[in-house]
Length: 476
Image 1 (cartoon, rainbow, N blue to C red):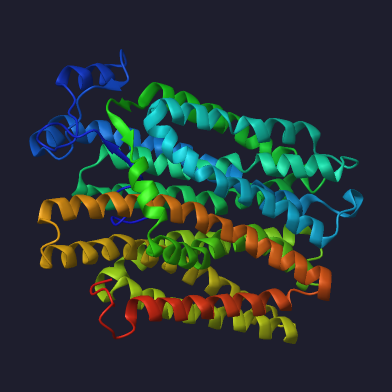
Image 2 (tube, rainbow, N blue to C red; image 1 turned 60 degrees about the horizontal axis):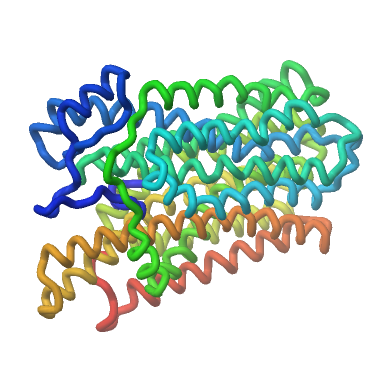
C-alpha cells in the first residue's frame, strides 16, 4: 500500500471543529507507561502534539503491527510450502494440491472486510491480540496432525483454517491508518503492507530450511516454527499497542462505495495485480515440480527458487507507487498489464519448449510486474475520487472541504473492498492451474487464461481511465 491508501473504512470520530477526536496528554502518557492502553485524545494532525507525543506512540504501534501482520501473512501462505512435503505417500495428485492452496486464499479474502471493521468495534490493540491468537487455530493442529495417512479431508480443513492469516492485513492497515497524519500515512502504510507481503517469501525460506535440514518427513516443523512467533506477536501487541478512543466504522461510506462503478472496476484490476501476486506465490513451487520434474526431483530443489518471486514482488511494490506519482497511475497500470501478458506469454512458450531459464525469467517477470501493479492500482484509487471531487467543486455542486472529505471517505471504502476482492484472485489462479492439469495434464491452458485476463484488464484501464473523451478523469 502507498500514501494513497489514506483511508481504510475506519476513521476517528470528528469533533465539533471537524478534526479527529483528540487524546489527552494524560491518556497518551498513561499508555506509554504501560498502565493504560487507551488513547482518549489523539491529534496526529496537530504538529506540536505529533512531534512531542504522537510520533513515538505511532511508531511503537507500527513496529508491532508490522511484526504481527508479517506472521499473519506467513501463516496464510503456509500451504504454498506444505504441499511440497506431500509426496507419493500422501496420495494427492497435482490437482488436489492446487485445491489445498486455493482454500486458504478464499477464506483470507472473505475475512478482509470483517477484519477491517473489527478495529473500530473492538479497538486496534485488542483486535491485534485476538487476530494474532487466532493464528494458533491452524498452526497447532497442523503441527500435530500432518503425517502420512492423514485424510485429504483433514488437510482441506487445516488448509482452510490457515485463511485466518489473510484477514490480518486488512485490520492491521485499518489500525495503523488511525495513528498517522495525512502526510505520513504513505510511508507508514507502505511499510506495514511491505512487511506483511514479505511473509510470503519468509515462510518459503522457513520451508526450505526445514527441507534442507530435516527432509520431507517432518512437515510439522514448518507450522511449529510459527507457534512461538504467534505467541510473541500477541504478547507484544498486548504490551506495546494502544486503542484509540472514538474510532468508528464508515458503514455509510462502504454502502455508498458498493454502488459506485469505480469500486468494481478497480477491484477487477486489483484481481489482476495482487490476485496474481498471492496466487503465483502459493502455486509457484508446485508448478515447478510438475512442469520440470527432471530438474526438481525433490521438494528441496524447488524450494531453493520458490521464495525468489514473492520476495522480488514484495520489495518492488513501492516502485509502482513511485512510477504512478511520476507518470500517472492509470498509464503505469495500463502498460504494466501489457508487461504481465508478455510475461505470461513467455512462460507459455518456455513451457512448450521445456526451457527452464526462459520459464524462470517469465515467472519472475510476473512477480515483478504484479508488485508494480499493486502500487500503481492503489495510487489510482484516491486519484479517481480527487478528480471527481475537483469536478464537483468546479461545477458548484460541493464546496472544497466537503468534496475533499467525501473523496477521503470513498477512497478508504473502495480500498477495503478492493483488497478483499483482489485477494480472491489468488483463488482463481490456483483453480486455473488445477483445472488445466485436470483437463490437459499441463498448465498451458492456465497461462492462456492469464494472458486473456491481463488483456481484459488492459482494455478496461484504457477504456475507463485513458480513452480520450469527456468522461475521462484527469490526473488518474
